[in-house]
Image 1 (cartoon, one colour):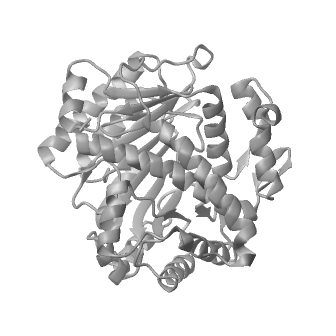
Image 2 (cartoon, helix red, strand yellow; image 1 turned 120 degrees about the vertical axis):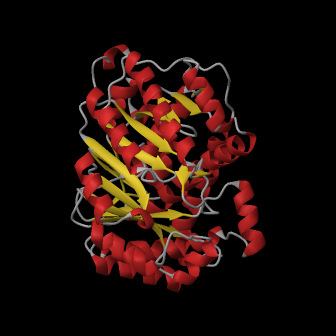
Length: 425
């Protein structure tokens, strides 16, 4: 249980988390026969209104806690997949979509470097590429890979570390290498990209506060550009498996872990780019949903959000191949958000990114946020979670609440992913 002095911070986080969890369930209530994505008339010809997320679902080994759509690497399937990705992107090109900001996630996008290079070449031939962000693991990093990614034009590189503690990595089933190797690879990559980001997990069942404090301190001592700290947010079945092996996934410990992040990084010259991402300089936000109100997702297991419509691609490699080569967009389900759901989703994503601009809200919704979300703003202000001076900015006190809210929203998406993976929808 939290202490009395924590109550003013923990109570609004729990209440907001409960509401977000309830709202997030609605994203599981999807319909078939989705409408085809379309460029809004006022966005025609522009490449700055939506980003493109590219999902590469292949890994050399599978981490037990990962909820994303991924498969063990099969080279023949992966090469066919990359060819299909180009066809899917071409479908968006044919519908008038233009992009300039690209994010590669997975899976492990670097498992076939020649295919990645060819795909990025395809993007450059069809778009004015301004920014490429890419995820990988330290297992994939070496001097040759770094040089190749630089030549491809990758600006921002995110490396999945999870922890530097070897005992904890073994318990996580993380087989991509040791903590010492992770440190070595991070330092190898540092300085070669606009941003190098290290991903960590906190609140894993067997993880101690002392282990996590040592991880944060080690990261800070290394001077890497940025770190993103993800609270554990397993899907239902993965949570059950973790609890069978370890102990209950205890959310009451989250605040203690989060306090370590704030204490160590704010005193180390890092600034909050989101409620769980901390940067020294220019930020690379893994949650591309922050910088863009709209995004297209391509690949098996990707999701997209356009003009208030939530889209889900098939998670099945076989179905993805069949639909693409049958001339169909591989979107299998969708949901049109109600006005209030859209407004709340917008508020969550912007406040998670530390600030909401009321004028941009007005431009998107042709409405005043103080009228449309009066009760929600009153909640945030009553508990001192935001302050308003032109922008509606998240206070240090409010950061934990936004961390919990985003975790609950992503947990709902992980539940959706689990269902689609298991049923191969």
